Amino acid sequence: MSAHTGKRPTPIPHLSRTAIILPTLAGVLACGLVALRPVAAYAQASDKGALELVDPDVFRACGDPRNLPFSNDKGEGFENKLAELFAAKLGKKLSYTYFPQATGFVLKTLGSYRCDIIMGFPQGDDQAQVTIPYYRTTYALVTKRGSDLEDVTVIGDPKLKDKRIGVVAKTPPTTDMATNGLLAHAKSYPLFIDTRADSSAQAMMDDLAKGDIDCGILWGPMAGYYANKADPPYVVVPLTREKTGPPMTFRIGMAVRPADQEWKRTLNKLIMENQPEINKLLISYNIPILDEANMPITSETLSKRP
Image (cartoon, rainbow, N blue to C red; front, side):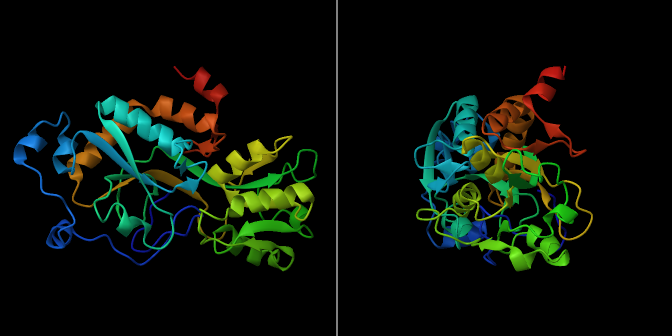
């Protein structure tokens, strides 16, 4: 996601946005939440970043137990697969701490030293330190193939004027929808949910299948993943041409604790060295990823690169 200086970024559906600030390393140590380890154990680490970790031999990731396509407790999400890749590259074992991505997620996982990395985190969020981005994506319109909305690329398109649009409440698209007078006919889905019991994205896709809505606007990874599960698959149109309202295109990296500078450098190096493989993984989940010119990165464009 794009960075925002001095203020909290606009919410995205799969991450909570709370006012909780990560505890400092000193504060965490004072609370006795970090297990003490002998210096010799840290010295065995093969990468410099491991010097800051509770267990240098384990890649300890944290994620949501039921939040596909990102992660689940069966290891089926693309963030799960990326954690597997990075653990293998570092020669570490992989462990996961699962916690619903609702209020307190960062504090109760990364901030409490129950894990050392959140695999997907927006640049510009002040709850944690973020690596370089490993993908860039945007909100997208989802519609049935054969509808008259397949060429809609902006929320202000006149074709949407009388349509019933599904949208997750309090996400960036709602601002442009309000500006264009589209909220009166919209169907709203909750942003903050317990992912163990609910899925706003799945509910929206079910309503599209039943004809209760004409189209939906979702965060790109969810739009691509859930649209591809439909039979036949729905059309996904990234909304990259919006000129007004809040940003809808974001860069996503990985979150670490503010004190873990060497760990962050290790992860940055892994991202840069494995970007082509990361892109292929994202594309396999039908995630709409964009380059810096807002052009889609696809299997076809990857095959043409040197």
